[in-house]
Amino acid sequence: MRFLFGLCALLFAVTACTNDTSEADNEASLLVFNARIWTGVDCPGVEAPAADDHCATALLVSQGGKVLAVGNDTSSWASQITEATERLNANGNFLMPGFIEGHAHFSGLGSSLRNLNFLRSKNWDEIVTMVGERAKVTPEGDWISGRGWHQEKWDKPHDHSVGGYPVHDELSRLTQNHPVVLRHASGHGLFANKKAMEIAGVNRETPDPRGGRVLRDASGDPTGVFEERAMDLITDAYQNWIQTMTPESRKNEWLAGITEAQNECLKKGITSFQDAGTRYVELDWYKELDEADSLRLNLWVMLRHSYNDMEGNMRGLPHYGDRFTCAAIKTELDGALGSYGAWLIEPYFDNPGFVGQNTTLVETMDSIAGLAKEHGMQLCVHAIGDKANRETLNVMEKHLEKDNDRRWRIEHAQHIDPTDIPRFAELGVIASMQGIHCTSDALFAENRLGTERAASGAYPWRSLLDAGAVVTNGTDAPVEDVDPIESFYASVTRARADGKAVFFPEQKMTRVEGLHSYTAACAYAAFQEDVRGTLAPMMAADFVLLSKNLLSCPDEEIMDTEVLGTFVAGEKAF
Image 1: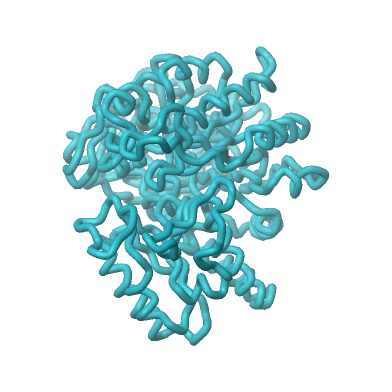
Image 2 (image 1 turned 45 degrees about the vertical axis):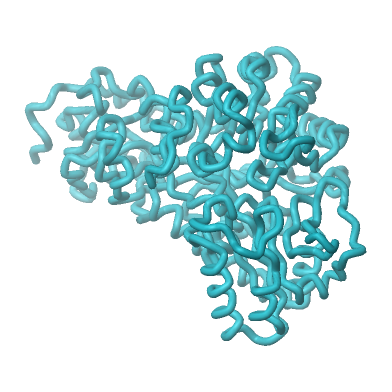
């Protein structure tokens, strides 16, 4: 049988790859041909790249779900291809390692897909209408929840607002018999109606908790907006209601969300997902899914609890399963820029005298760092403002011994004082960033920080990369859509997809850097670079087939890219 005869030869040493592998890792289950394949930076596994914008044209996958070979001449693979080997003609489309979502919230994504989602809502009126419609079909007394609103992104301000946020009266009038909790897109603020505040016991006498704020009107009454730690006042009441459900019902609802999250990720080319905050009960449920072969993609998670909850409760961690891994601990030092929660060195440009919220004591974060070190787990710290990043680097520097490869991470690392940028590479700290946050925040970030600070240290990918730091990519879903194409577009253009803004384009990544940040860099950030992230021989055959060549298509065509197929361990998952 003839396969692409006439293409330039690729030497593939079969014996070198099979001496230490099973027969399943030497027989081909799938041959992909007529593709434009990018295997990773410097084209690992390919002796001579096919062209400037792709490494190879054919890929061979083993029965065990690994890459057997990648190259341009399939005739040298004849002994590994049988009648049972599936053939896939890629029709000249672009094939690359599967996207690795470097920081998002898996169960949160699932929940957002099942509850009200306001990511595309244009104004408060739309949101109130959506909640009102949901109230009509929700049993009286049941909570209504949603997420994704962002007042800075609406097409018009609300005419009854305080501090840029609407007041609860209109929403409360339509939902008199239903408590309502609507999380801000960032996850660092929420909106509650009158019924929810009554159940939570919130009134004008309720004090602001440390690290949080209850927004109030001129008379001192709560407007319905709760920022940072103040959210606990409402979410605790919501969780009390959740606890009235049977354990089986709670688990089934969670499982339904996980099914939605897996489908959404695979549809968008994501083959691995790094979850930024998993509870103990979820660890057990994920283990069950993994043991039952019910995880359709690879899941790496960060344990997220208070120090008091984790101290003395780390048995069985880190955990390494088949497709499920928990080998990191997550904490946070501040909030989000959009809700004035990012902890800054100097006050906000548009909020003089206010420097944001330090949501977790530095001393507590230091204790959690010690816990991670003691148990051989990665430390992952949410830090957005320049003050939060500096304090995190200070604590990490205290714990990180020279030449000890711990790969601790700063999640988001959005606003960094220029003097602290070189410290990431010097300490081996990974900048776990999200390209889409830059352009999503572009409508208000410069107002928050001022032009000078925004230009020198806001989403400074180029400066970090030039200083030698490892920069990863993701979406922080459900804060943003989990779509990696839009985040990649933001990374390589610094432009909003709607054309409304370009945010200091001198900090953009190259196309190769952008793809690397979404593949091998994320694998490295999870100590998985020997398993996935490239399509070199004996790596996991996790790949995605796309309608556009992301290395060479014009900028204006990137957002038109369609996912034609997603493969996990060589099996078609979408």
